[in-house]
Length: 360
Image 1: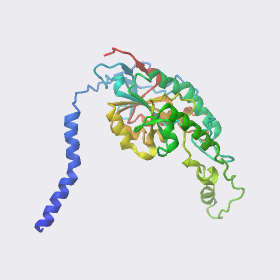
Image 2: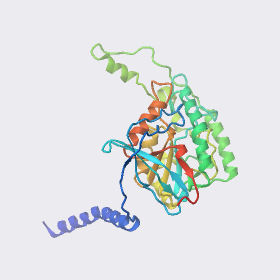
Image 3: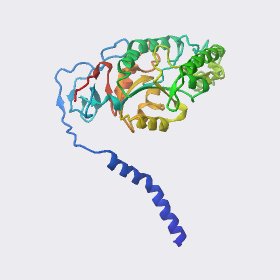
């Protein structure tokens, strides 16, 4: 191999290995380790999990439960977060206590969309879809926010490091005036101006789309294929929602009492800016609530698939709600989504998160 090619190959190898070396150095420097005793003790007659809000969540019932030692053990902890996960290899549910410092903890709500709540953004008619995809289902989500999530936010606000919400789109000029973000903190005057502009913008949009098709052209060979191509179960495009619908500034649900110090993170900006903001704030743990358990809650910017790469994440199972097609209740869909997530996530519930100064 010529010398210049060998040199180029060596430089390339060093460049490729630099991130790995940096990560290894960061891990060694920033992450002191301890030996965790993974001792599982059988729990006799275990109680159902997530049984406090049966209207929204079908309780989890499993005959085999184990107790494990505390996993998170912060010095000076003042937040008790009992949690559980499921293990096929252990063949049961594993429960464990955790002791967090509230000042190192963020409470994050995924996608509290202000839809069909009187702020102006609403489901298009006669066949448009948004959020939980029908006005009736959106109202159930709003009831869940009002009865379960908002009281939880209020109970921990001022104790945890921060409360944050994620919303679709970029930080547009209207929402920039309304909400604190990872970059800016609007004044009271700006907030009031933003609310006025939001009202005008949302209420001036034409929320009418096309009706359902009355006829479909299907082949005699594969009519089912052609049927679903033309009439899928979920079409949120401009056909039914009208052009420009998804460019409107989506507000936080009216059922949430947003504090001026609460932070909005926007999906269009991606995960890294939010991650870096949380780290600058000193956050190490995240209590995650919000919607929809089977989609946005796991896969969007502030979803647990992102956050669990860098933070200790606790899914507050009964403070979340899954989409529930073909059902009039979210109970079983949310149960299934949280149960699956518990393979690789810790799950807690509202009543298991307790602020207790001096617990450690």
